[in-house]
Image (cartoon, rainbow, N blue to C red; front, side):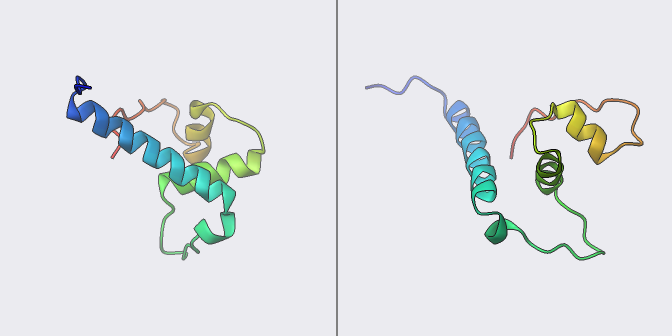
Length: 84
């Protein structure tokens, strides 16, 4: 079968699926995935989102998560379209 999909398209979906799998594994094994954060270190965006979702114990819209990460921000930041 001939591959008609561009390589960039496939790489994009590979990145998305890889990130989703990491999040699922963190939820599945919360003790092994948690790294202790020192007071001088900041949490990653993913860790902050996971922390907020675990405290909420229910699904939240992305805008609610962003507002909880930065409550002083009155303006909604646009979501990033690139996933690295």
